[in-house]
Structures are given as C-alpha cells and as structure tokens.
Length: 303
Image (cartoon, rainbow, N blue to C red; front, side, top):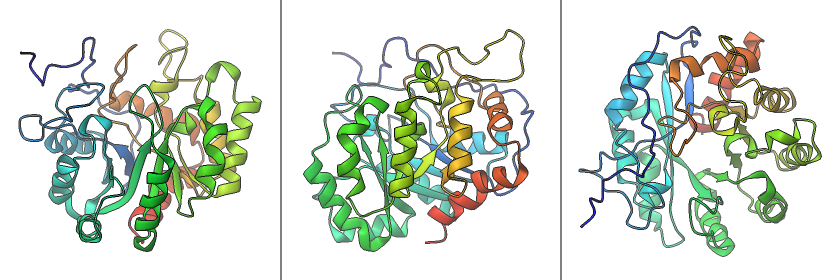
C-alpha cells in the first residue's frame, strides 16, 4: 500500500537554511499569504488531493517570521487539506491575535461553525478556480457561501489564471462581498504588463473595488529569479505587473510570501532573498508602508 504521506514526485521542499535578509521589513509587517501543511501525522491531507506536500508546520512558520522580521500572518487554507481546516485553525490558536485565517468551506457550513471560526481569527473564504489543482467550483455553492459570510464582514479570496477571468468576471462582480485576488490574477507574462489581457484585469479590479495580492513572482516568472547572472534584482519580468497594480490601487494591494511555496517546479526560492523583490516594486516608503502594514491591517484586523 502506498504511503499516504509520500510527497508528490519532484516535489521541491522549502529552504530551511535561509540567508540573512538584505531587506529589513518594517515593524508590524503582515505576511498576507502563507500556508501550513500538516504535520501529516497530526493533520492528514485530504484523500482527494491533487498533490502531497512535505510538512510545513506552525512551528516552521514561526521560525520564518523570526528570520524575515514578519509581525503578523494571514494563513490561507491550501487545497491539499481540502475543507478540513483543522491545521489552519490550530495555527491560529497558536499565534492568537497576530494571525488571521482564510478557510475552505462549503454551503453546508453552520452558523455556529462560522462564529467559532470568526472568534479564532478567520476573516475570509478561499475558492480555487485553477482546474489543474482542484475540481471545478459550482457557482451556486459560492453564492450560498457568500450569503452566509456577508454579515460577518468576511471576504472571498479567489485564485484563477488570467485566461479564466472572462468566464468568471460577471459572476464574481455580483457576489456582493469583498474580493481578494491571488497573485496578480496570474497574468501571462509573455504578453507584457501593457497587454490587453492585463489591462482587462486591472479594469475588472477597478470596477469591483477588489484587493490584489502582488505576491508569488517565483510562481509567475518566465526568466527565473535572476534574469542576469549575479544580479541582485530578482524576478524582473514580474515586477512591472506588480508596479502597475500598486500604482493604480495603492490602498488595495497586499503582499505575502506564499511560504512554503507549494507546487513549484523550476526552483525553490530562499524566502530571505525573495524579500529583494519588495525593493523593486515599492521604492516609495509610504507605498511600502501601505502594502506591508496599513492595507492588510485594515482588511484583517480592523473589522
């Protein structure tokens, strides 16, 4: 019988022996997108998952906080745990008021369950529309969940790839809850930041007052972390997309590490080195203050 904790072939583990960060994060920085995986012995992965990661526990996340200088985290439920949010809720209990959560739930969730999750720090629900990672999401169920969380002031986090937006735009715009879009809407970098496709994405964000995560350059890049050998700048092909989003929506952009970086194939970034990306997309100190502190605090802690 196959070991149910055996990692997906080719799985890249997160970097544990991190470098000293060259970028110093301001006190109060919020990592608005990270995950916890297992430990599988305590919190088993979902039977129907499409990938099996290595463990990345709440203790490992605490070490990441210390190494990078992060003050608060928003922990997002990953698809490998399905709708069993036990590992995430356990991490929220551990971190207390310095963490918030985004869960995966269905329309069968009870009012009592929602109140319990709210009291433990949950402020949002994630729906994944990336078909290679999850089964398709029934629109009716998303609408029912939106109706249940509306009075709590929660939001919905949506993960999709840029070619899918035309099929999702009208539906998402009519959910009548705040939306947070993962990873710049996963644009096609080959088309450029001035492409009609990315312009349509920015217009959608403007129309709906969505929040946008300018995270995951390591997931979006075509050129890789270093376009020029020996350069200190990282993910230069992704930076123009993030710069545009920050310029257009300065009070509705969020940043996160995406630790422990699930499903990467080409390389695994050192999270300390990954901080260099912030210098390329937020040269203005006030813009960086909004991105790292003011915006996530307004969305996750002031409601």
